[in-house]
Amino acid sequence: MCFCPTVKDGTTGQCEVPKDPHHPDCPSKVDWMRARWTSDPCYAFYGVDGSDCSFLIYLSEVEWFCPPLTWRNQTTTPTHKPFPKRQAAFRSDIEALLEQVGTGKESLSFMKRRMRRLAAQWASAARRLDDSLRSQWREQKRILVHVGFLTEESGDVFSPKVLKGGPLGEMVQWADILTALHVLGHNLKISVSLKELQG
Image (cartoon, rainbow, N blue to C red; front, side, top):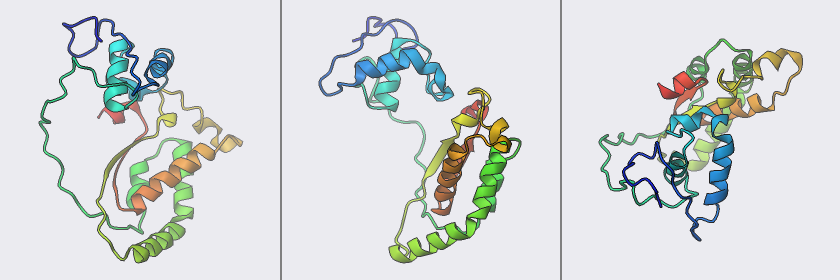
């Protein structure tokens, strides 16, 4: 229930956190957001501004921990046309992916070296999967991947440590996730900065 009925966008005012048996985690998630919403630029990208209203909008519309807010217009017809569905075709060439990952950070160079080193194995795995699926139709997804731990806004503590024996597991995981999505034939947009995420 909102105590600010004149507010339609939830950017100001106070909202009461609902106690809904169908959404038992809502209060604890709001508490978490109050303490940590500035920890990742993704929250601000989705309109979170530190107010309880913005937390509830995020937790009910982007995630599903809270019930829909009755004062939000849930019936608005989207103004954009859906993208036409395309078939995802397995890829064995990773050059386009390497170019998209970009340069300028040692962590990105590390990830690209791993992608190159394992390219033949990814291609072989893609062929085996394609054979087992018998070229069955798969929809190509448009996927935005925000590698938040590498952003300047998050402090990017990893890049300076790559050549000094720092923790590499995070970069290994991201390299493998990006390569898997690319090899599976999906349309990727990769963001490693808040500016790219908002662009």
